[in-house]
Image (cartoon, rainbow, N blue to C red; front, top):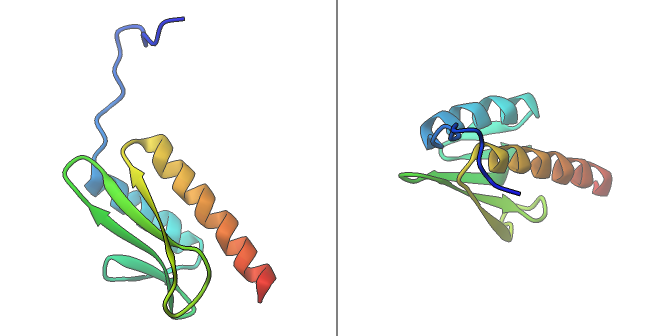
Length: 98
C-alpha cells in the first residue's frame, strides 16, 4: 500500500504554534506555566525547548523537587497529542501515589 495522501502533504510542524497549543492544554490539566516549563504543586513536571523544526520535551518520571527526566522529540501534530496523553497518564498515576 502506498503512503500517497492523494497529492496532499501534511502541513509543516510549527514549534511556536505547538507551544501555544500545548500551553493551553496543559493549563486545562491544572499545570502552572513557569518559564519554559510547567509545574504541579510547585514541582516541575515538564520542560519544553523549541527548536527550528521540532520541540524537545522533558517529562518528569515522578513528582519530585529534582525529578529524573524522560525526553521526547515532537516533530508533528500526532507527537503533540501523544505527549498530552502521556502527561494525563502520569498525572493520574501521581495522584494515586499520593
